[in-house]
Image (cartoon, rainbow, N blue to C red; front, side, top):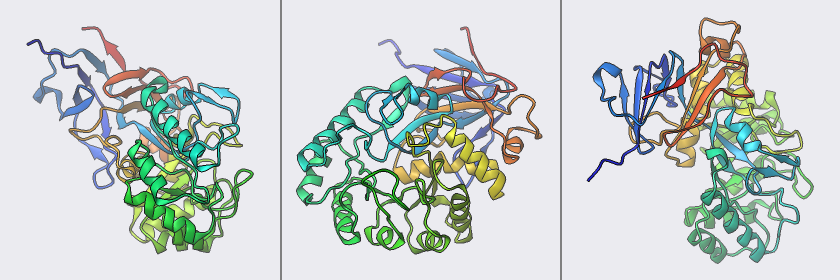
Length: 392
């Protein structure tokens, strides 16, 4: 029987960012992926690089896991009525994002709030993004917003239909901590992960969700702990970091100072593995294709964190918190990558040093499941060096 495996080889890698806090930098200059999964990492002279279907010359640039946006609000396809914008997901791909997590499809015009309707919309959303990946991006969607009157059987029905996420708790009529806690427990029982809105109201219909409600609800992810857009007072942010072990999500469309406070508190309590990143877009402030890269640069430069660690917040930390098979460069993981380098004429000894100074890198290529999904980014500053596909 003929070998039908699809083999990708990436050669001449300068450095590898692993996505893992415990070892953020890997040795090696070559990676091999077969059928969309990483099969080998190391030095080309010691690896089987023959008979590749696609060979990429990384040109001594950096290889990192594809970035994960932990907090987006999709609607359908690559269109958002929030900003009347098309191809926003494709633009984010050009910012290095290869995976997105829905925090609720809340911008649907006439979003159904009755239980039958909200369940139907969640299932439909889960299905259409399962069946269609805009520009190849992995969109995990179908996240119903909780409404009063939901019963345990509703969560069982959603789970059986394939729904694995809840929209932000607090964006619907469920705002009381006790009610939210019961529904979060039902969701968790059936394998559905939850996120809670944190801070002041973001859209009409939402409301203040303070630290007492967040702690009582006990959702899996403290959504936009730095506000979306309005953050809680500093003492409440510290209390949330110290009072539970749930995900500490920092978003681009939030309060930057509060985001730095949350990150620093996570390090102080030695729980940096809880820090994950999102954009909370589309939103009133728009779509930020480079939002995750900007967060990495902001947290590194102003938060005094090595850039390779900040990358972990947007890759391995999120993957582990979200139970994804991507976000880490490790044998067996999905072959989702971004190839990037120091921006042309930017200061710094290398890409990480330049990011540490607050500068964005340039993206030369993205790869999802072992397939090239974009080449030179149309959104980042131009990279000093660019990868290329080698003719075989």
